[in-house]
Amino acid sequence: MASTDFKEEVNCSICLNVYTDPVTLRCGHNFCRGCIAHELDTQEGDGGYTCPKCGKRFHERPTVQIIDLCNSADCSFSAPSEYQAPSTFCTYCIHAPVPAVKSCLLCEALLCEDHLKVHSKSSEHVLSDPNTSLENRKCSTHKKILEYYCSKDCVCICVSCIAFGEHRGHVVEPLNMAFQKKTERLRYFLEKLTSKKKRAEKKVRNLQKRRADVQEKASGMTKRVAVLFRDIREQLDLLEKRVLNEIASWEQQVNLSVSELIRQLEMKKDELSRKMRNIEELCDMTDPVSVLQGREFFKEDLCDPHDVEDEARERDYKKIYEADDLDEGLITVTLHAGLADIMTGVKRGIYVSESLDILLDLNTAGNYVTISGDLKTLSWSEVNQYRPETPERFQYCQVISSRCFSSGRHYWEVETSESGDWMIGVCYPSIDKKGVQSYIGNNNKSWGLCKFNNEYSVIHASEVSQIPYCVSCQSFRIYLDYEAGQLSFYELQGPIRHLHTFTASFTEPLYAVFYVWGDWVRIQS
Image (cartoon, rainbow, N blue to C red; front, top):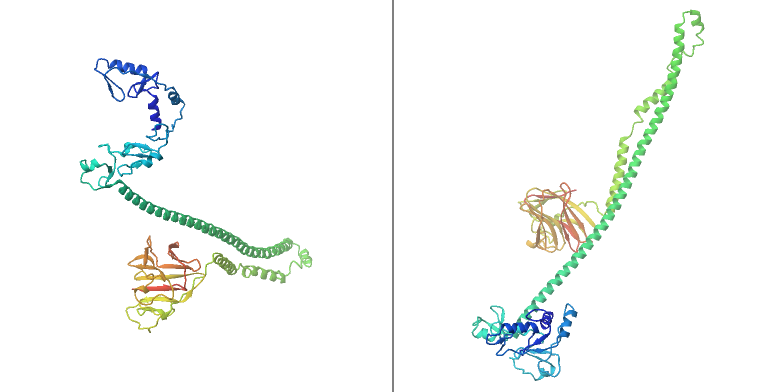
């Protein structure tokens, strides 16, 4: 706006260019000498003259006065693109420009500090910032000061709008009052938005921390698993070498025995061949004297071929086939023992306890369930068992384990029937034994996985969350990490699938707890 006003001061309103030989009329408007002369010439004979800018009429041709606007014109070329408007000065300080501090909307005057002190304090004289545009504070229809606010149309109006304008009969209130209400409402919304922003920022921080924790835990677990598999591969390599060495040792031992026996048999075969040739030569002779006289010479060749050495070689031959075969049983035992040692190291490396041998506590069983003799199976019964009333006994079809967990990592596996309803999980020993609040998950002292009407869910403190996908198996693993405060449920059919993990700060020992209705639940050994 300041730049536009500046251009209007140095530009002729007729040719719209910078003034050339500028002159002014008595009304105060400036033009180029040639432009205004030509404009006045065209008005000759019309009975008067008018200013092209404001329309002020003159009965006689107005005289023009030469003015000096060179400095302003030069400024138009040298001024920066963003022109800074001069300070607003007091209307009443005519001897020297004094900066204004307020403007009176009624008087349409700018006031300095001194004139503000003596200005009327009447409510009609509305004071505002000196840079406030007066046009924006006046009614566009009646040109009066905007003093009221129409709540119906949500606009600022003047007195005339209320008296005989289009807002007559509407609910109105003074601007200051409406301003105060609007400001209070804006502050209220600002507080709400600030509170929401803080909550969002807190959630972002929590999520960032959660992401960092997840990354740290995943990184740690990745390193542990990598080290574990490296150790497994090293141990498998050692086990493979040990077993293969045993096989190679057996092979080498047998080959040595076989090679020695073959060598002896080859020598025996050569000796026999030599004797056979000598005998064949005797048989080919026709002279009886020669054959008979050569008898002493061939006496050794004509001895019995079956001797002590043949018997020894025969024993060695049978031994190779019968006694020195590979002991596959020994190899199998070696493999099993080695693999068992590796698995023990794996479990130790990931800190997983052996599957627990959980037994049911008959003293806590409700009267409409039966417990198997091995204390492993809980079955629903239509017949009241009339067990002795004790503080530990559940009113409904529930039972807890005889052992508890107050530290460490443990897991146990449970098999359920295809029909009927059931709940499995853990609970504190202080859980209620009577009333609906004693059911697993209907309190803040138990956590459970439930099946009701063929729908699966998890429950704690009466808050139920549905399992988001179909569960189609009857075998489940319950994994407890007491120090970490985590209780997880897994589906065991096919690939093991995670169902849900509860996170809590456990404050009491935990017992395995079971509920059944209509069929049975069994703890797997």
